Every structure is written in C-alpha cells, then in structure tokens.
Image (cartoon, rainbow, N blue to C red; front, side):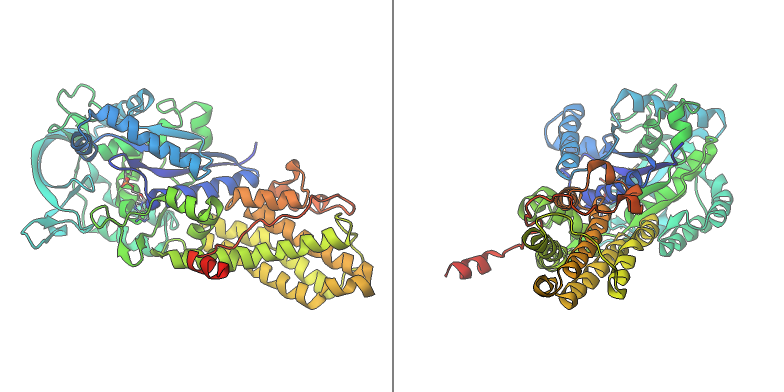
Amino acid sequence: MPPSYLVTTPIYYVNDKPHIGSAYTTLACDVLARFKRLDGYRVKFLTGTDEHGQKVAKSAAAAGMDPQSFTDKVSQSFRGLTKELNISNDDFIRTTEARHKKACQALWNTLLERGEIYLGNYAGWYALRDEAYYAENELTEGPNGKKIAPSGAECEWVEEPSYFFRLSAWGDRLLQFYEDIPDFILPLTRRNEVTSFVKSGLQDLSVSRTTLSWGVPVPDGPGHVMYVWLDALTYYLTALGYPDTQAETFTTFWPADLQMVGKDILRFHAVYWPAFLMAAGLQPPKRVFAHGWWTNEGQKISKSLGNVIDPLALIETYGLDQTRYFLMREVPFGNDGDFSHDSMIRRINSDLANGIGNLAQRTLSLIAKNADGKVPVCGVLTQEDTRLLDAARGLPEIVRREIDVPAFHKALDALWDVVSQADRYIDEQAPWSLRKTDLSRMNTVLYVLAEVLRHLGLLLQPFMPEKAGLLLDQLAVPADSRSFAAFDSAHALQAGTLLPAPEGIFPRYVVEAEAAAHKG
Ligand code: ME8
C-alpha cells in the first residue's frame, strides 16, 4: 500500500468573497498535495467553507438575504476560486451540508457521554470578528473605551446559558503532548506562544450559543446551537466519513499529516482542537503549521482600508502560474510578507522570463536549429557536465526535505540555484560555437542541458502545473514519466526523440509605460 497523506486548509468564513489570504493558504496546501501525489503518496486534500455563526449571520442580514441563500452564493465563489487557482482538492466541505451536521452531532454526543461537556452560563467577552472568547486579562482598552482582543478585534460582553467543554482539565495533557511531539506546532517560534497560553491556565470553553440560531443544533439541547469553532473544526473529520471511524477512509487518513492555518487561528488548532480530539478518544493531527500574514504595499489588508487583493485580478493581470510562483517564492514560508506589484513584476521577469524561461528557450532553440529538433546523443561526459548533472540529480532529495517542513521558498531556491549553474555552464560551454568545431561535444552539452531541464520541469509541477507541463511537453516527456519515479535513470531523455518546435513558456511582463516607450 502506498503511504497516505492528509493535508487540510482552514475552512473560510463566507462573510465576504475570497481574497489573497485564503488563496495563499489553499495554494500552499495544493503544492503539498501535488508534490506528495507525484512522490507516490495516496493523498487527501481538504478545503471548504465555514458557514455558520454570528459573523456570517450578520453579513447575510446586511445583504438582505436569508443565511442559507447567502452562504450558497458566497460559498460558490470560494469553490470557484479553487478552479481558477487550479487547486487539486479532493473534497470541498460546506458546514451547512447534512454529512457535516451528522459528524458534529456525533462528536458532541461522544464528548457528552464521556463527561467532557456540561451545562452552565457564560458571562464574558466575545469578539465577533474572531468568533472567539477572550479572558479579561488578555484584553486592552481601545480609544473609545471598547475592549480590544490581542488580534485587534473589538469585544462585546455576552451573558447566556451555554454548554461548556472541560478545557481546564486538559492543560497538563496538552503540555505533555507538545513535549512528546516537538514538531507538532511549526514554525518553532510559534510553539512558545501556544505553550505559554496553555501554561497560563486554561478555562472551560463555552461551546454553545443561545443568542443565535444559525448553527448546528445541539442534540437534546433545545435553543442551543454549537459554537461555530467546534462546528468548523469538526469538518476535518466530516470529510473522512466520521462518525464511521472504522471505515477505510478514516483509518487510512486520520490523524492528518498537516493542518495548514494562518497564525491568527493557531490557538484554535493547537489548543482547542487536540483537546476536543483527545477528549473524544481520537488522535490529534501530526502537525499544525501556522504561516504568516500578507500585507499590501506595507499596509494591513482590510475591507475598510479598501486594499483587499483579489486573487482573480492577480491571475488576470500576471497569469495563473506566475501568481502561484510569486506567492510561494516571495516570502519565506512562515514569515509575514508584503505584496507589491513591483516585486511581482520583478519575480516574473528575473526568475521566470530571464531565469528558467531563458535557459529553456536557449537550449530548446539550439536543439531545434542544430540537432534536427531531436534529443541529441550524449557522448563522453566531462567534469563540468557531471557537476551540473549531479546538481540536478541531487534536487529531488533537497526539495523533498524542504517540502516536508514546508519551506517552499527554500525548495524553489534550490531549483533556481541549478538554473544559475546551468546558465553559467551554457555560457562557458558555448554550444553555439561548438557547432562548427565539435558537433559531438555540442550534442553532449545540449543533452546535459535538456536533462537538467527535465529535472526542473518535474519538480516545478506542484508549483506551476501548467507551465511545468509545457516545459515537459517541449522535452517530449511522456505523460507516464512525469511522476517522481521518473528521476530514475531509466526515464532519462532518449537520444533521437523528436521534440516539438520550441515555444516561449515564460514571457516577460511588460509594464505599460515600458510598452508605450517601445512603440515610440
Ligand atoms: O478563521 N495573510 O476563517 P477566515 C495570510 N473559519 N493569510 C490570510 C490572510 C492574510 N492577510 N487573511 C486570511 C476562519 N488568511 C475560520 C477557520 S478552520 C476549522 C475555521 C487565511 O475566513 C489564513 O489561512 O477568517 C487564515 O488562517 C484564514 O485565511 C482565516 O480565514
């Protein structure tokens, strides 16, 4: 049996249309899912929409719609974005689906039966924007006297009958768990933030609301709907057919290998979620990775500032794979990052057009012109040839290691290091002049370059599926030789294979002012 791999995105609130943040998280998971599939894993990749709760209900009311029609509409734009971004998710879960309600109620009943839930009254602070409860000592005072959560969200005082989850009883077991699995929370810098929150003492968590009705009804709890976070987190189980924990899907994929989240929702995933699972007798996920936050030209992205970045507009302006590449390359994964059009254009022109694009174009057009458009014969290898080939052949191991963290930027750095080496090699070997002096040497140099491009093309597939596919087409790599099993020398390019006429794959992005100047 192939090894299994479950990777998940958070499910996004449908209070508004998707923006660069959700596109980023989903894209990162897509790269992982595609990578693992190519590497022989049996993968399940989950995403979806979080449709209940006060925040969504409020947005529906503001739009003058009933919550169900509103969520039907907005959820569709999230599903649409997965298509536009060429996301390879295996399922898309909406929390308003019957299968999800069934999973939530089953988990609730299990927690209740195990004595982990009790009925009480909540009196405390609630931040609508975060759909989160905060303790008094976590809050600061805003300019208008309002209480402000660490996230910057305004809090309101709430008092209502509520069911509670006995979170306070789980502190020591959580701390033990973090110690036993030191890489459960990554990046490591975020781990301390979580452990100190748990060490400061956990309070029981309110897990139902009575002042709103837009949620999953609490079984045998008239007037109560489940707290939206208990509802949302359960989606990870819904998708595996929970409560049927004996079914093959569940036993194969749970616990999840990687749950990707933004740093804003780490507490829910690294504290509440493993506590709920352990309390229900289920295993916690193997790893939670909290990535950083994007700003726009130095400013926090927010609807009120009017600087929300629409991923569809980026795709339209710059191209799909260019956008995917930029998002995965520009910021060290895990750090915060700033979006700017200048840096996007710089990446497209220097890394793609002048980098790999130019290398591919030079190699392929030399082959077309001087080697009858066929994969040339590889003669005796020199030290320089072997050095470059070894660098390319060493890439799968490096990239595999970085993807496992995941450190996408480092994986891409490693690929571009080989692009630079190949650039130097082509300049030094000057195959264009060998044509007249040593045809067999020219063929060897072009073969080496083509084989290096094949390695780059294979490894770029998870990041830029379309562009990498085009590069492999240009090298006439058969469809069944595109998984990572094709790094085996048996799949190396075969001399004499006819290649298609070369076509540019990575065009320059020409800034309008530049284009106008060219026209004169
Ligand atoms: O929190 N930069 O949903 P949400 C980077 N429904 N990532 C960003 C971002 C930014 N500026 N803005 C948003 C929820 N994100 C819950 C989750 S899961 C069981 C329930 C990404 O719509 C990032 O992944 O507020 C963040 O964690 C997520 O969107 C929050 O999405």
